[in-house]
Amino acid sequence: MKFSTRSAFSSKNFRIYFYGNILSVVGIWVQRLSLGWHAWQLSESAFIVGLVAAAQYLPLLLLTPFFGVFADQYKPRIGAVVMHVVLMCVALLLSFLTFMESMDVTILVILSLFYGIANSAYSPIRLALIPVLVPSSQFSSAVAITSAGFNLSRFLGPGIAGFIVTFYGLDFAYFVNAVTFLPVIFSLLIIKIPYVKNKSKSTESYLEKLSEGLRYTLNHELIRNVILIAGISSFFGRGIIELMPAFAVTIYAGGSDTLAKLMAASGFGAVIASLIYMTGILDLRLRQAVLYGGYGMAISCMLFAVTKSIYLGTIAVALIGFFITFVAVGSQSQVQVKVANELRGRVSSLWTIIVLGGPALGSLVAGILINMFGPKPTVILFSAICILCLIFIQWRQTENLTQSP
Image 1 (tube, rainbow, N blue to C red):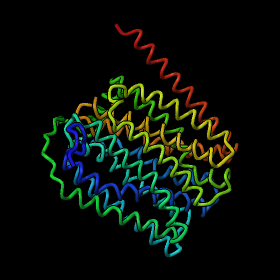
Image 2 (image 1 turned 60 degrees about the vertical axis):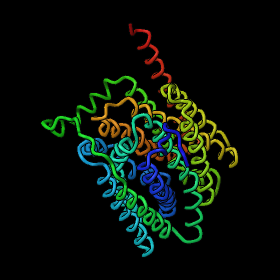
Image 3 (image 1 turned 90 degrees about the vertical axis):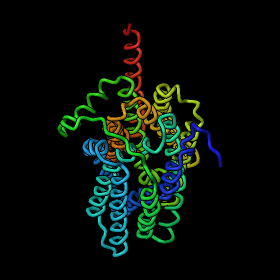
Image 4 (image 1 turned 90 degrees about the horizontal axis):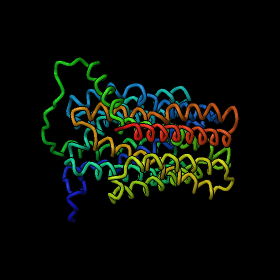
């Protein structure tokens, strides 16, 4: 099959990586749903579900910038192989302890934390890896295609997880995730990446390199703003999505099958958003797409809060998934296009902190509020605060544009 020269699929390296990685991302969503459902089964507490989600995402918030420096210094392919092996070992341990009926809340939180630490190391490596697989003209395409594959797994993964958990158990679901890491490890070992000389100053200390990436991001108005908007969307929107196990039971009186439907709906919406970016029609309007996608996410959360029907709730969750991904892909594409290559790992790590680390705090705060006030008031409050934050950011952007010469 012949691909357009602007499509990342025209790069052999990218094709090998993408096809090897697709099963792994499906496995990741199988494990995420399983962890959430496992936490609910062990505790029947929205707080514990939020705590398990926070354990997975909190390391992204705290550790990713440190790993981002290493991503700029070392070959990302080797780092990606090592991190996939570590993630596979965590999944195998989850499977073994669950099979032996030795799992409790404390162990589940600790293993979720180990998973989060390994993922925080892999995230900047992954973001630094993709640009070396394709030329700069294909950055946006590579981000959109990777996101489409990831979000297709969000659509397929929950349904697969629901089936596996219902008929085979949580232990087998974790084992399936472990096995899916093998193809991506093999694909990373066989691709040939051209050597790119690192332009960063070798005399700089580790902390100097870390602060350089932070200063660059804060001083770059466009990158700073899209990351900030994406972070707000992630905190409030993904924070709600991570608590779907609690919503499935408390609002819709369902089980793992209901949870699978809601998470699949979120994944379906995310796939549609990724496909829109794959067309390239938004390449020149990424800043506007990120901002208005944030508004769409907040309004969708409000719709979810006021619906009582599982069918309308599923539609609302699909919209939430659509707009969260719309913001995430747009912001990541904007960062990849605008960032200086020698700072890519560090700036990408900051994007990871804000966008992927946001759910760590969002889910934890939402879990506490749900225990205090109930699910629907919490979602309404999250939506309202999100809208106010976006209005403030838009006002500041407009003010800066009017003041510029």
